[in-house]
Image (cartoon, rainbow, N blue to C red):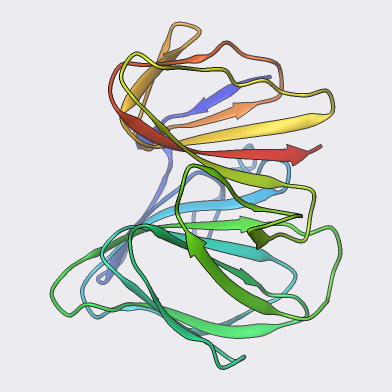
Length: 222
């Protein structure tokens, strides 16, 4: 069954220092029908005020991707990694058997707009790791890189031009999720815009782009 997760129907969290939209259940937002899809457990779109962010906290048994859409994020972790991620970069933290990290807006004047993505690995434990890569069309993360995930899942970045047609084939036994980052398109008569997600279990039609746009494509095992 294919499903459109409409932008404004996502869960919403507002705090003094951030606003977040949740495609799947997260924190105080609980929807039993939205507990994730395939290996994709969390897909949050966050807006973080200058100088604020997520203080040091722990993770285990999760692969966590961070994509900065605007602004800058400062990452620090218990492995000794310290980095600033800007638009045009994506980072992957594999939590393994346990890691502590913080993610803070690196600017005192500019808000940060980011996607936080959690993917479930094949197994528990393992050695934590951290890496980053340029945000370029093609595969960003997967079992064979450039950022190595702990499952047979692949995350790709797509940039499209107005009038372009993007087929979304689903191979037997695979699941696909498409998150639109900007622009708008149509699929099987449904209009999808920035912030919308497409949850695909059956082979759909193609995305017909009506503007320039960009999307993340998650190709996952069942």
